[in-house]
Length: 391
Image 1: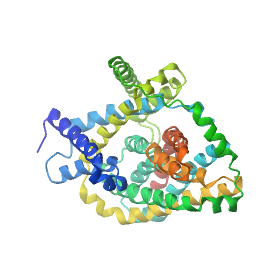
Image 2: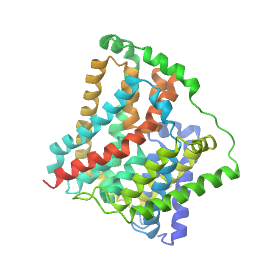
Image 3: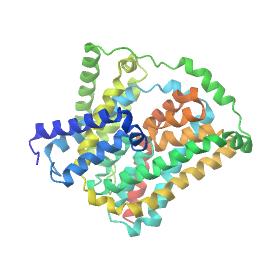
Image 4: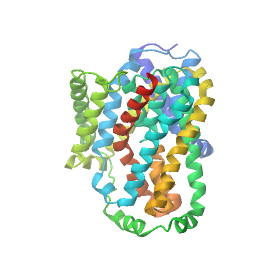
């Protein structure tokens, strides 16, 4: 068993490096297309703990949860191009918000149906999944920390996130062949897509080789913001019974809000040097520590969670379809609005490019907006679930 803190941290970092290296090998391309690296970053450490190679608890895991999450969220927020998101058009924004509302409504409804057959702490697992389905992995881990979800519930939740979430992504890709029929059925006005396409030239996607001074600015500023946010959060009271906003949540809300505010300043230009990539690195490192604390046997609880996930995603889809018909939104905005929630910035561009090859940046922008909506909307969903669990 590897227990020495430095060795344990190095092992988790090595696992992450190995996973991403294997994902670049052509022979494994299909495997990583179906199950992306982020999933392996969770399950491989879980397997190591189950087999006794790594411990189920360590001060390293606590340190990573406390510091890496606000560190990553600050960088993801400060690099958001919010003006470009707002320029996507009214229908794109409406479908994005409706998709979020579908997740917030669907979660409590699914819990109402299946909660009596699940463990007492299942509401915390549902809250965690709501974070994943409103913005992706970053928000999932933020909500997990917020509600204090035990690691035992994360195993089946990751299974649901993968099977139901990526299963729905497959359905959306399949439906791309029928977008003309759908658009005709809802009498869609495709001028919004044309306008969004015209806006692409305004979106700053410049990348340049990273310099040492870039990394110094990125890491230094983010560390200062992280430590200050944690220090302030520790002095603020917990909110909710059961607790929904803990001191750790205050720290997260502070870095998210400050990061968003700073995204309107020249500091957002740090993205040209890959600031968000540094944020994702911290996020995936954190995910390895979450996996190492989990128990593989918890996955056996997945079937009932899968049924709940299917009901949950069905509410999300139904609401999207109703509003698409009402506002005459094209299937492209239905698909990207849905994936921007359920899959986040990693999946939304993929789905967008299947519908319109030149529109991947639109999917990316909508996916990034999921981070913004997610942290606030998922906290609301978590509060509802907590109230239901203790009624």
